[in-house]
Structures are given as structure tokens and as C-alpha cells.
Length: 400
Image (cartoon, rainbow, N blue to C red; front, side, top):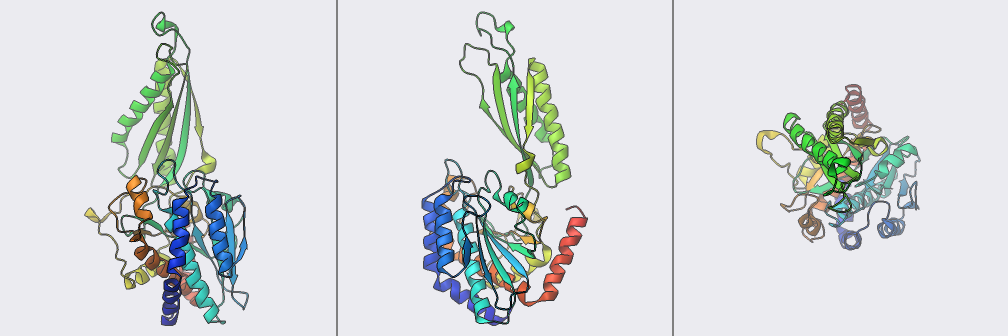
């Protein structure tokens, strides 16, 4: 990366900041759930087409897309910038995916501007619109479709209430449990029934007690979504839905086994049966942040005034889960988190408001510049890209 690149990227993003904010606001004002992001898909693909990218709409999934820009030389590294744009039920863009879309679009414009200015700069830029991160994992569909074959590195960034280049992103699996019992009149002959709600409540309480014995970095959170039809009928059916998270996949497998014991004990105690569904297809892996890429990003971020947040004790708290974790096991990746000037945590109504506030734009554009120059450094310096790949190979071999 040259100083000229830095200037070109900064200038281009500043020139387009009004348009970039307009795209972000369109997505923010029209929240759409997983695989329903029709408006966001159309807004982003129209913008990319306008800026001269070759765009494939409805790519892999109906609300997915791919945009490309290649150098005139037709060779060089292939870098992917990833965008997300789905919202959450009831609390809309409370994870700030409108800003993920904006930061990815802005970074892509900066990279393209530098490539256009220097015909000798070899490489290909892919802009991947991945839907459904909050629920099903659009990136998992992309992986299955072979989208990342031939990609040398992947980059994206996520808003939050702190600056973390190497976030602790957990592996996750959804566990759904259907308890089956037997109806009976709750007043006249309750002993004739087997209470499926009791089974769910007992399992829930056992899981709550288990939390004392798990690592502070791991997580279990559950809700009872079905508990009966009327107070005077012993519930014959109940349903428990939960997410189980851990720092690594082996730890996740161990934790799931312990949770399974809690479920079965609840069913046994209530005289019911439990049907357990492990959603392996949509399971997310923990994130492996490439250290070489992350340090490179950090150096540019600091130059732009983005300073890492200092946490008590020096350890970064867990920051949830993402399908970018799965991507990070296919290609070298970074997924820094950036502060949008709010104290509100993600997945709250307050964070949804912050993600649409004008003051979020300052950090979003600065992070886009840092991502863009990081990508350009990989294009310009084969030796850095080689170090990135060596580190990636080492991380995978170590089973991180």
C-alpha cells in the first residue's frame, strides 16, 4: 500500500459519503428478515452497477449477490469484501447490518478507485452480498456453492460499542427440543397425564444450574416456545429452543453433550419423551482472525484515529457468533468490530437507533478506508499475502 493509495481511497470514500449514507439509510428504514432482504438486495446491487461493477443479482440465494471488478492485467490476488443486510425480529437493525453493508460498499469503492488509477495493480475484487446472517447463514450457502474457491482473503467489519480487531466470536449450534407427554383433566384426574411443560421447565432449570459449571466464555440461552393450550389441560406437548455457544468446536460438542443430559433428565422425571434436533446445517464455527491481516488493518485504523478499546483485565469478552467464522476456515479472514459512538450493546432497540444515527457515519467511513487499504496492501505486496496464507495454514493445523 502506498501513500497514494491511502489518499485515493480516502478521497473516493469522502466524495461518496452522502450516497453511501443514503444506501445505509434505505436499508435501515426498511428492515427485512433472513432471506427476505429484497429491498436491500435491490438497493445494493443498483448502487454497485452504477459504480461500474459487474453484478450478478440473486446469486446462490434469491437475496444474495456477487459484484466483480478486475484489473486490466487479468491476474493477481482475488479478494472478497463481504456485506450483510438482514435485520432482527421486532428490533429491526439492532445489529447494525445496514452499516455492515455500507462499510463493505465504501471499502469496495475505495479499492476499485485505486485499481483504476494504477493499471499495473493486478487483482480481482469480489463484493459478496450474503443474506440471513442472523438466522440461517447465507455464507454457509456460499461455501457450499464453492463461491470462495480461488479467493485469497476475505474482509468485512461489524459495528458495536467498542473497537476490537480480534474479536472473540463463538461457535454456535441451535438445539430444538419437542417434549411429548399425555393430556389429562388438570383438576379431575391430573395423575392420568404426563406433563410436557414440567419436562421443559425441569430441563430449563437443569440447564440454568449447569451454567455455574461451564467456562465464563461459553453461553447457553433458551426459551420455551410452547407450553400447553389451556390451564385445565395437562400439557401433552412443549417445545424448548436454545442456542449453545463455545470458544471452539470441541468445547461446543462437549457442552452440547452436557445440555443433552439436562434435557433427557427433564423428560425422564416428568415421564415424557424428548425429541432433540441439532441444527448442524446452520451451525457457525468460531472466528479465526488472521493475525497478519488484523495487524495490518490495525495499523491503518490507528492512522485514521480508530483506537482499540481497553477492556478490564485485558481480555476481550465474547461477541456472539457469525457465519463469517465458517468463512475464516476456508480463506484467511478478518472481521473487526468498530465503535459507532454508543454505549448500547448489540441486539437492543437502543443499538438499532444508534445504527441509523448520523454520528455512526464517522466510524463507518473510517473503518471502510482501513479495510480498503488493507486489501490494497495484499494486492501490492505478494510477500505480505504469503505471510497471511502461512499464518492461515498454521491456525488451521493447530485446530483453533
